[in-house]
Length: 145
Image 1 (cartoon, rainbow, N blue to C red):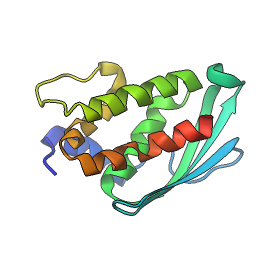
Image 2: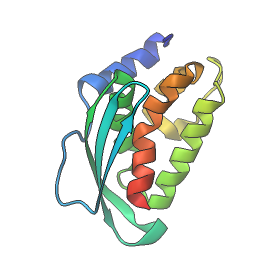
Image 3: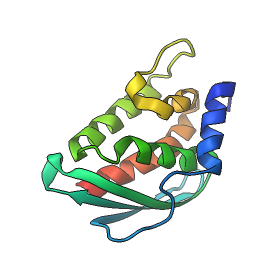
């Protein structure tokens, strides 16, 4: 996979020192996901405060085994969604999935509110790896439903 040096550095930083890693209690929902394409396995736990789309995401914890893309993606995702509402998290998922599927050009700018998720823009050039980057997002969607 071809990654820019800056993007590779961000992904490796999250891979080597993942944020919010390790399964924690209490939690409201637990989801297990498996990516048969490359063997990634994820267990995701979510704790919320409130009900429905306006429920605040208080904590997301996880255990993941798999490629550096899936491991870094879940670390980045936790940073983006903790403290946001379920609706905001869903909107982020939709936006990131669309950007990945658009095969972003290297010169195109990702919205600044996506933070380190911009490092995954190069994944858009490798369709099989998009599933790795989105595994945690689909798990989060399921946990919040």
